[in-house]
Length: 285
View 1: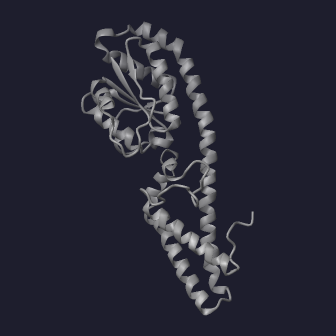
View 2 (view 1 turned 90 degrees about the vertical axis):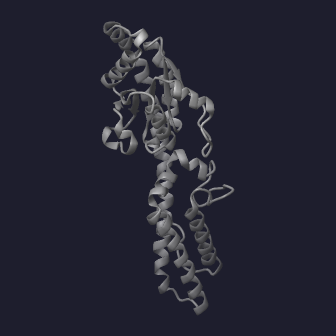
View 3 (view 1 turned 60 degrees about the vertical axis):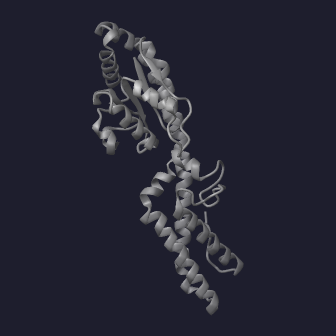
């Protein structure tokens, strides 16, 4: 019996690999399908993956905080749910609770990553494997023998990658706070002694910057939140780059207002520096 294991994002991928290696130890006749490479964003799923979805009897979905709204997870869950009973579409929540789930995934029975829930999931998969069902006592013994290995590996993955994500989040948060701090400092510009032309030009630049700032962090906030997710951020910001200097060929690609914000920010900062205007550009610390 084929089991399709779906993942999206680095943490989810590592967990999916662990489950792929572990599941046949418990249910020897199960053949997990796991693609080791994520699908390039914007490309169609390959015919091979489509075939695997169509031929699988169970779908296991590795849900983490980083992929809660992943379109790839939603697509694959929707595709397999069209051919199997909803009870065999199995989202497993890692570092999450049922209250964290919204949208299409709520129609499926979720599994928390703990011993009792995982045993219930394995039992469901076993019972659906009509030609090779393990007796309850055999399944219990095998599960008890192999559960500690999976628990240990997943705990290790969650611990190591949560630390990395928190570090990344702090960096992005500090950056957004810096931009917000700049906008607040600029609002004090009416107290500066500027020449008429300088004052008019500064007001125009400030207005443009604040308009774009509002577009990105108010009007398009839902899209901004999604774009800042680690799963998506790597498509908008190059490795070792920053929000302000993303070092990508097209700063507006799939995040249109971000390009306008960055352009208005640079024009404003350049004007402030060139005219030696007394407006702080960074936090004092």
